[in-house]
Length: 192
Image 1 (tube, rainbow, N blue to C red):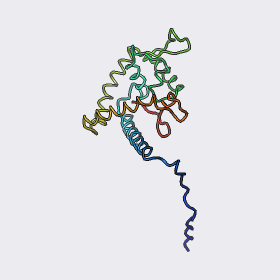
Image 2: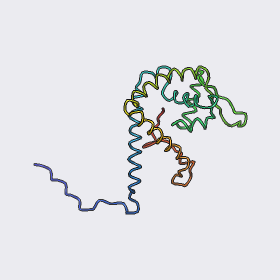
Image 3: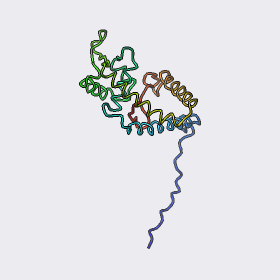
Image 4: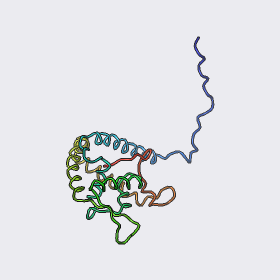
């Protein structure tokens, strides 16, 4: 004997009120975001699987890389946190580990006794350069082989424009500074 088939529900599927339905622009923005986010996830997984992460993890490298681009190789911890996709407490612990290995040094800035200045050491700069050379070769393979140079230039310009615009786009509360939030679906953490 076969079980009875479920009785179809005659209740209509609830639909959002017309004023709450996403606009065509919202759907397009969401599609673009999902494409960007999923592409980043796919490439990050491949980068993380690369065999260059012997002396430093990808997250540690991200800190060293960010400091290498700063004037004098130093940033306040809160400034470093703006360029890294980690919670402040996780970044603080990571910086402590890097300091214990002699790759960065922490100090108190002269103008802010409550702040922390993080500076790349010579050993940290050397490790960042060595790892960076191999990392760029891998990036070239996974990204450069997927797009032609003109497309890469266009993509870089568009992404930089989108990133820069975030400072002026208010969040739902009207606060542009809060609009610099992190992450994507689930606020996944990642690195360069």
